[in-house]
Structures are given as C-alpha cells and as structure tokens.
Length: 271
Image (cartoon, rainbow, N blue to C red; front, top):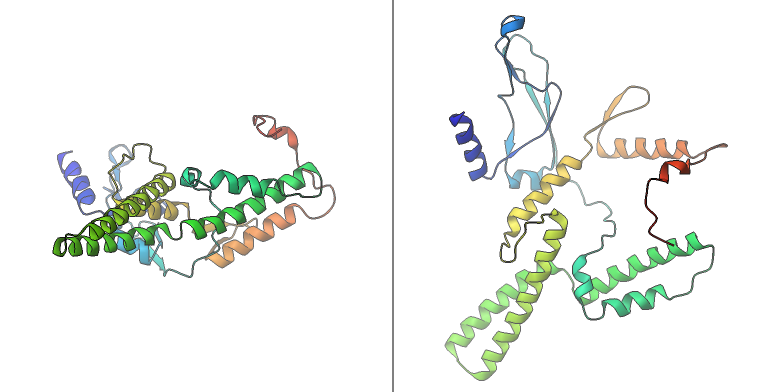
C-alpha cells in the first residue's frame, strides 16, 4: 500500500495525467485458477500538460491478453487540428462591468416580430452577438491583457526606480490598477471554466487551471461512436457527419413529434 501512495505522489509531483482507456478494465493477471486469480490495472499511459496541448486526441485501448500476463496497450494519436467554431459562453465577470446592464437592456428592448417563442429565440441570439462584440470592444483578450500589463508594470517599475518622479509614480500606479483589474477578470473566467468552488483569491495558478480545462475537454471528446448498423467509427469529421445524419433522420418525415410529457419534470422558469 505504501508503494501505491508513493507512486501516486510521484505522478502528482511530476504533473502527469493518467489517460483514460477503452477495452478491458485490467491489464495484468496472475493466470492462476478461478479461485486464485488476481486482476490488476498495472499498465497505464501517463502524459504531461504539454502533451495534451499538442496532441489532445490521444486514446489508449486495452487489447486482449495473448501469450502474456500483461495485455498490450495501443496508443493512437491525432495531432491538434484547427480550432472549430467556438459557441457563445456567458462570462459571469461581465455583470461587474459598469455598462453591462445598459447594453443588455438596449439589446433586449429591440423590437422582434413573431410568436413568443420565436421572439425569445431571436432576442437571445441577438443578445449573444451583442455581448460578444461588446466584450471584444470593452475588454479584449483578457489573457493577453494580463501578459501585456505584467510587462508594462515591470517596465514602469524599472523606470520609477531610475527616475523617482511624481509622473512616473502616477503612471506606475495606473498600470498596477489595470493589471490587478485584468488579473481578477482572468481569475473569474478560470473559476467559471473549471467549476472549482474552492478557488480562492490569490491562488492564481493559471497553468494549473488551464491543465484542468484541457483534461476535462479530453474526457468529453468522443473518440469512437457505435452506429445503428453496429459499426464502430472514429475521426472527428466521420463522427460529426454520423451525428448530423442521425438527428436529421430523427426529425424528417411525417408523424415525427416530440413527447412533451417527459419535460413535465423540469420546473418552469420562463413565463
């Protein structure tokens, strides 16, 4: 047991991540009789944060035991591809900006024709576009701003040390204020994305939280999909096409209705 704790401690100290797998649960067996057989998962693939950043789509498959007490591990790697469409995500830190409420009100009060649900849908769509443009205009790339202001503060500090004038002190304080502002915005975004309730002010280890986000995205990634024909398919484009075809067929043709009774368990929030 002590060796297991030591092994876990080494993994944690090195910042390694145990990749998930598909196939049999165990990778080793002592090959003894039924009542004395032992199964363990001794073999695993460990990667660091740099690996996940460059090759996020890495899969591990446990293959059948053949001629050994260990099963082979098959690692398949797909290099990082171009970024796909990024969908709208509301950031909680927006609500703390001075002109946020006025921006939302002005957008929401714009007139839209149609029935109630259509108007609501169109207003939500318009609001998401408005807030995205507003965020780019008012805040820009927050993570880049943090790096930029860090460099500006460092340069201003050096200048103030060399020339301790009132003007240099004012410039340094102003840059510090902006730097702290964007640091807090960055902390808020990381807290929201990682959903860590124990995130405390001052624990701004951004590299650690980016690592958590990458690990979560990797776990949510669909590596394989079983089609209705019983065939396993893989590859982003192939899986995306199969998913689109499935849902298109589900709502094409006559007598395609949605059973709204299954929605009765959801509490009504919009009136």
